[in-house]
Image (cartoon, rainbow, N blue to C red; front, side, top):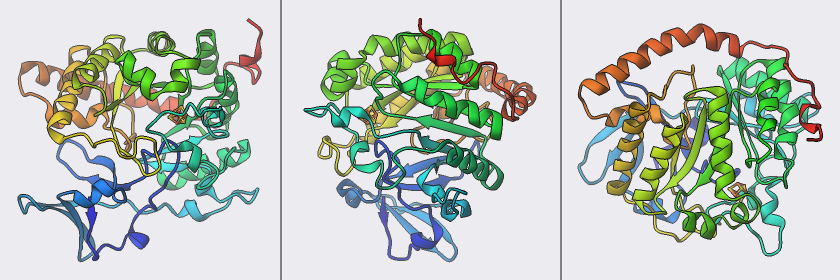
Length: 396
Ligand code: SF4
């Protein structure tokens, strides 16, 4: 999207934040709609954005996107920066350097930058910019007390219900590093806790992490086609392998039940048929697909890779809805979790093909939302972990 000079984003918007893999490197906007509002993160700084037909204009106190092809315009909301971003923890750390809102949830990168960036030659994923971001825009390693205070501020001031911990490759210590954070948020703050880490073949560790408080796991295997996986994810190919992602995804989906685990993939690089196969596979094991549209981020190895075409992406997202419906995956049931970096399955309801199966699925979802309310209320409350802090350290 292009920005008109009328825009006053310094005062009105969340700062464009170049953190982690770089997928959040755009402007957060909310597109209001009758089924639900859609939160999205729009690239505005990359070269390809300058060629976009979409122009963001400030009109009075509101914002509007104008489509240069048709002349159509529609209102959007620009979520402001939360006040707590500028506050400091009792240890003196600026809160925005500990965690950031990505949509309505709090994302925290828990530890030092991904080790794929430090091997020689580097084995980083080709679309990623983590190596140049962590430590520059946010703290390289997060103190437990800082994390707790930031989660508390995000919960109290921004109504956050979901905290998502994420980390790059940590040489097999990935889950161990996350464990104390998961436990602390569950016990000292109270929130739904998600974990996105490199998968492990030691599947028992997932049981322990659930006992400590994890409610959700997501597995970024990015490409379903094994050749693309190997070509663009050299570190993941060498140290973990695609099969480990699949086994961990299947295991945790079985443990946590339908709709609690996600498989994260990138659309727009591998052939669309492979992306559709990924969506079918993920939903067939009871997980939900989180699909990122490929973004050639400034500074990534794939910076000059072509951007995907709208015509190719639309069927992908139609397929997300149809596959979730076919497999009875509960979507949009958890309270107040809007994700801007990926397209949530719930967002694809706008692309549903009308008919009796859609009507039945939508009715079931409505019911599930009602039934799930008290369950989520309990899950969001503070509670003591069922496992001790050393749960993941046992020798197996
Ligand atoms: S695992 Fe890949 S995408 Fe994740 S931080 Fe490391 S290089 Fe980036």
